[in-house]
Length: 303
Image (tube, rainbow, N blue to C red; front, side, top):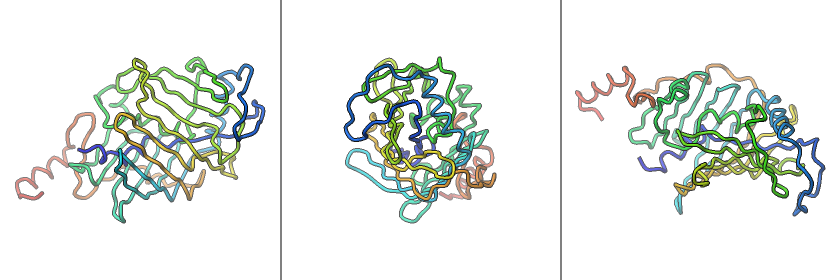
């Protein structure tokens, strides 16, 4: 499978939020401000800010997503919609030139995705238990599904001793030691130290860095945010994902957003897709029903 065919699935694992309410910092000019001096607030203050944003959000629904993916000089665009609900529920569909191209989803038990251009175009799924137990040897992308609520501004952070604070002028970083696909890594949340207001992002980037080499594995950079006036929550409007190893970038613009809208539970159920086999990422096998369909098709000469 060419790497370009995996690009739409990344939207399942990475939608990032920015934030603006910083009562514990002094406001300053937003255009080329002078460096901030003095000791920064403690880690607990930054985590409380992030957690406060999360407490305001139960669901996020977006009816218009414009996506532009590029690798080197090649690029393509998608249009879609998505909905997310705490703690693990997520659903997104995207179209390419008016035809269904991507379906991705998650609930408390599993996550799944389907890419029309994949070869073969299976509905790939995996339980969170299998993922957490290490039964998935390698994901086809460097992002972990559990990050989705954090990157949507819906996750919670703590305890404070998991994070190290690094300050550099007008920027601070919250650094957490973790692992990705068995490799020691650092998850880094980059924030504007000064107080800003939407559409300027307070959280400017999320980074995943290889701990051994210091190289960036992947990142998300927020360039514009939007304020939900009913809840005071901040959600992203424009952001860009980067996968340096594959020279990949994906820019998203999120419009038609609503916070805490009613969402039916059926929105987060994996459904069989007619003519599409289901593939378990942990066992690397088709499920029983799909395998039987494949067998019959081979006997009948159907492709």
